[in-house]
Amino acid sequence: MTEYLYYLLLGLGAAFCAYRAMISKHLLPSTLYLACVSALASVTLYLLGAQEVAVIELSVGAGLVTVLLVYVLSVVGDDNLDPTSIIPKPLAFVLVATISILVGWMAFPLITTPSTSNEVMLAQVLWKHRALDVWVQVALIFSGVLGVLGLLSEKEHKIETQNESIPVAAELKKESHV
Amino acid sequence: MNFDPLNAVLIGVVLLLAVGFYGLLITRNLIKIVLVLQVLVKAVVIALVLAGKDSGNLGLGQSIAATVIVADTVVAVVALALAVQVRIRIGTLDLSKISSLRG
Image (cartoon, rainbow over all chains, first blue to last red; front, side, top):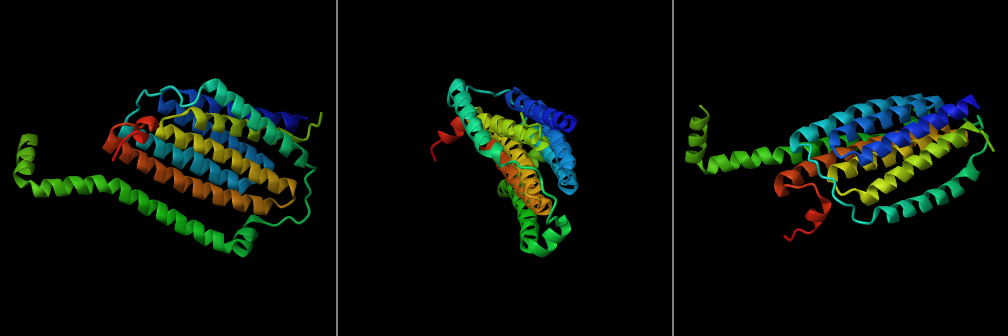
């Protein structure tokens, strides 16, 4: 019963933080609420016995993604834009409630008493049964990093080429800065 | 009423999914959509580990969850970089204005 309450409180807390992240008018509080969701999710994962995934979730979800979002906000600015939604909010609420009831109705009977048989360690699964997936993940990380570098460096390259094509304007700009 | 702890985890997963879907339906800010997708993926990660634990195959559930976290992080990084480019070139992050642009 105590364990049930712990899990329930963690789930409710994560859902509350997610809702606050969604309805917040500014993006910086939304980012911080998302980090809270990630921290609560990692605690849940830890209690479920998935310590490795909990560490990955905490470091990536609450660390890397939060830093990235704050960096992006520092570049684009924290616009106070929260325009009216595309579809009416009551309709969205009804749709989501229907979907949630259906998901719960289908998923709850599937939960049985957890069996401890056939337990395999994570490292064994990763490096023996799913070794190809691990290499795909490595390639995915590198492609993501290269893609971001390409996207972010495009603007600087464009500015450089513009300055080269108009040398007088570039010199005048430098002089005005001095 | 069944007080199995895994049922409580499932309640949290369904609530997180509901909040994520609601956010996807009502949000028009490009960065906030990335943020809502992160919420959805966190719910999926917990559900994967829960399914692994329930079926007695926690290692497999963890490995798939780790793959999902990596893929989701790369998606978020690329989407945020695209959002920065959209903001610089078009000047807005509003999806309706972006989609109504003519090339």
